Image (cartoon, rainbow, N blue to C red):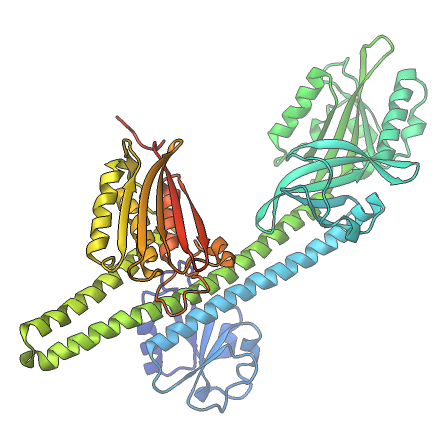
Length: 607
């Protein structure tokens, strides 16, 4: 949290001058450095941040208004004066340490952030459900496998089936982002609806998915057919279309700039423009500052190519308010095939667009909340694991150092050497753990450097296996084999050492002394394959899918020490090489970790 870029203002409510100075000094150069002392609740009326209140100086009820708006940490000598409801944390006034205060602030800040995201998600869900319930267009969400994951009430009515019949069932046909398709839906025997389906890319539960907007255009298609027939026969069609609720524009492409020659009452209802205000103009007057140039160009291209077009475009009403306009343009020809008119139907789809955006926003906030919860869990697990793993070597170092300090004069050279070697061994252990943590953090931030150079990996493996034999592998039979061939290839030697050393250390750690540990090198198509195998405790099947998560350890490791970081480091280093790693294991029989690295790196300049 001390490295978090988010600033957290802290307000010190009725702390003494000494307390204020001490807390300000403690919080310097932390995300909580913006410290302000206040004495009256009114000073916090518009504040945003965390309040630290000295309850010894607070009268009953002074915090009630603050607690409704801001997270409060109470400092008190006794439980008297501390509100039972609403205080986020309580700390002792006497004997308070910097670590206690920072830990409390970190937890309160994280909880407050989660609460904020949760409130945003609840508000977004309320807006979303309101819009979806009111929307007359059907909305479906289909995952990457073509399975329906969401359906709104309008879609239930459109398919004439309840959501329970459709959810988790296959859509039945492929979809692609950007598609606009007309479908026929059998609603009941002998009754078919014509549906226009628009497809957009989205996410659902963190995975790629498709948002399908379904509009019943049965009446519109009938209107288009009747309108086209009316125009073709050139009789009084105005009465037939005057009552249409959709906007209708007819233009004359035979005149300069393709001017409007007719609009109906539906167009006036949507845009606010009366017929006499638009007759003779090109319909570009509907465009505004945020109208997409690409959408305008699509219409120009359709007019030039004399072809139909369906497009949603941002237009502006007469009063200047924007609206999303779904426009269907169709050319009309006479009996000889000559172009005589363009007919455009205009439909206000603003509500539908808002519902779609609400759905996307709701999903984004839900994913954000899940990520915040996961981050909180990972942080807690990280602190717990690292605290435990650091405690043992630090205890050994402290004990050895105290023995040397007190009894060095009574020890012979060998005893002093043993104590010093014990300290050095534990220091190296701490260095390895810190190095693994550094690799994981830099990989997560995309800052892990990848510097491939040509290396004879066979020779590299031979040297590494000899190092292992002379250190931790002295009680095992460490065997290295290599298929015949040339093993010079571009790799990052530092990352390759992380990969193979972690795998060999695990193989030795989780197998019995005297058993066999192997490193086998071979070729497979365009990959060099590294197989590290043992005959140890194996990995339960249920654990194998999560092996490469940070801090995750197999359920059968029992008292065998470890941080759960090694395989995460291996995975990240393999990914940087453009390779992949798999595991073959049976519980109680042993494990084989298989790493495949490409023999050529596209990022590597061979010159």
